[in-house]
Image 1: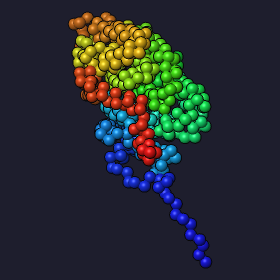
Image 2: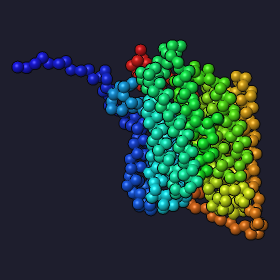
Image 3: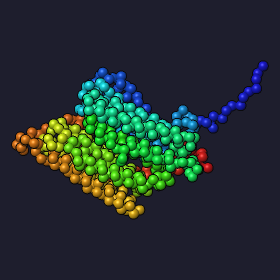
Image 4: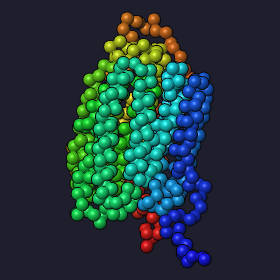
Length: 522
């Protein structure tokens, strides 16, 4: 006997029934590509001669993917792909706006430089221990963090990049590397724990982890839920990951210990993921709470800037000096977050992209200089200009750029941030940015004079022997230097991208519309 037939479920309520446009696959493709190639390179770990031949073209394809995604977002607006076809907020979404796409494309460019530079910097042992697989997997974590539209998934991608960074940090298993890894791991695990606690707290308050959903519901809960406590936890967690004052002491204790290409990758990208998370969560999800905390953030930004550059000026080891300059740059970015205005946020975004490129290239130049001069210590270095004028010229350009001097990429975001500070009467914050620039100029000028201009101790001009650079190191360094020159001489495209990305944070309606097209249009 036939039973009563059950009505068919309306799957359109829970599922997205439309086919995914081909261009939208670019949202997931970079992360999938990195994981796939990382697995392939892991299987090739014993074929150290083949690994660079696979990894470098793969990173080149990654650059094409991310720039194609950036072009797609510029042309069509924010793009969302929901995993498993479940509709948000139940399905996990990748949502890419201009901020995420811009940072993803810049980080892929930096990773390609690291892959090329690593061919000469990482020996067979380092390749066998997983340099190239870890490089691809850390990029999967970084790109996943820039693209996810779900806060718990942001935590997951942080874990992916953190685990991969542990592997890169201890390549070689030297005593100093293990010591640096312990400091790095402990502080980052504390920050990750705070991140997880805050995320559990957030889910208890909102009942959702989708960023667009939280953006809509925050206004409804404001005044009844302890959102300030929640935002303070996130601020502390991501400030620690970004190495902002007063939780920045782990960075100079660890970034000088690994191989130079690893230090370059960390300096260029890892702290910027923390800045991205601060911009996304405080700038877009909780702007009112950010406004309440703006003075505290501004104080932390000024102290991070000033103490970072003073620490750099006090160092004898060039690598440690660069580590402190990374910290100082984080303060500049946090100044833009503290301002919260379109000009302030766009200045922070522009400066973050500039720092990704320039700090990575500075570590490359420092590594090449140490090979030619035999030391990272200023007391024993010297004569690099006589040994290789091309390296000296490239390094000088990077020094001028990191100091914010014309005509290079570091100038424009600082001008934007100084103007944004003066526009709201925060003259002391503008002064901190300008003083930081002056002290940075003194710091890098000291390094260039001692390590490049003066003869090496015990050598005269007649005894200096010119030296050539490896092709891979030259290409990686010159490529990134070309980017900072181009962004300095022709800043309008980057400035426009940064300004549009900042507007997307301040007015997230397009972001919400991409995730919830029906609700947002009603």
